[in-house]
Image 1 (cartoon, rainbow, N blue to C red):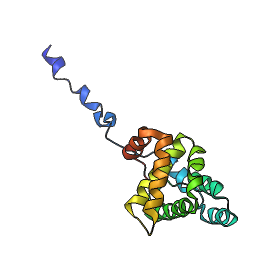
Image 2: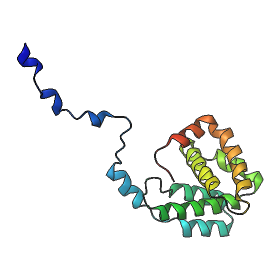
Image 3: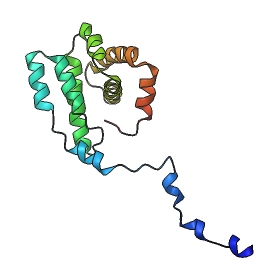
Image 4: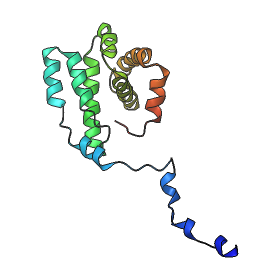
Length: 152
């Protein structure tokens, strides 16, 4: 009996791999996020043509959620903020309703990112967007955004 209790076979198992707080980014997701082209010129063209809703969808499609480059994220944030400020107050609700749940969560991420670095008159516009996104996504959207590991 004493020989079995001195066994060290249990030490071959790496228990750290089961720790829920340990985060390892999957390489295929990072490669897919890095492969996304910049939607800036496409969004600019859509805004000039007056298609703000299509510009919003294009900007959301190209969101660099998995990217590590801060410059890429800043550029995408500037593009989305430009799109959000292009909307009239009466069109915001229709735009938010056209997004799915993941789209509303992504929009909330950009809204909170915009609150972090406010520019001239952006806070008032972002508050209007936040009101409409909260109505569609509910409190769950806010919780998902605040607890998400991938940022925009």
